[in-house]
Length: 199
Ligand code: ADP
Ligand code: MG
Image (cartoon, rainbow, N blue to C red; front, side):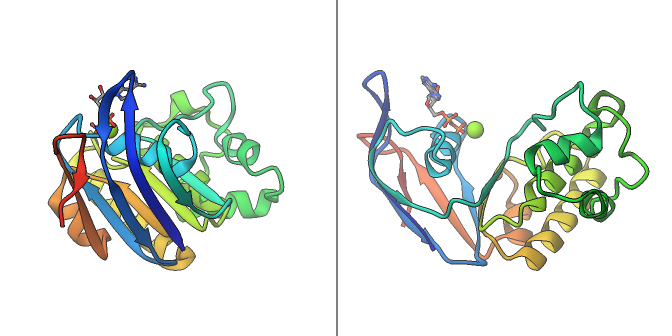
């Protein structure tokens, strides 16, 4: 169970988030939407434990994965090594199986620069799911892909979520992505002392 109870978050005394409280149950998928610059990425980073400069409390499992908007792969490591560096206990067989599940079989020796953007995104998806996370956080994972690629990525993510059942929070701008993937939608909207969730 994920419990977020932020009372305030500021950058250099400029308030970004005001009171933001919600819970995510195991196996539940929640979309986070809101206008650009409102604080969605900031909220994700706080939830992930990447930003600890805030007022409030977070309770979350240790085993988590973060899929960033940019694939954040190591350019000088092969596709297979990009998986294995993050998950040193992963056997080669399991790593190859994960690559196969995201449609990257046969690409294991290629470097990220030799993959298309869609393939790089799928590799970061495989990397996220390879650790069977209890908490999955994704920041606009399908942005700037062509519609076909975005659609197949979404279907793949849906399947991996169904199999792994993490608690998931993801940011999207697309209503259709929220509808297809999420059980529930959280909306950030601006308020006097920073953004809050619309109720
Ligand atoms: P969103 O993801 O909803 O587009 P962000 O969470 O990235 O919004 O940003 C929310 C606000 O916080 C913006 O005004 C942004 O400029 C500001 N901000 C984000 N990160 C930092 C930072 N590291 N230092 C200062 N201001 C920041
Ligand atoms: Mg953002």
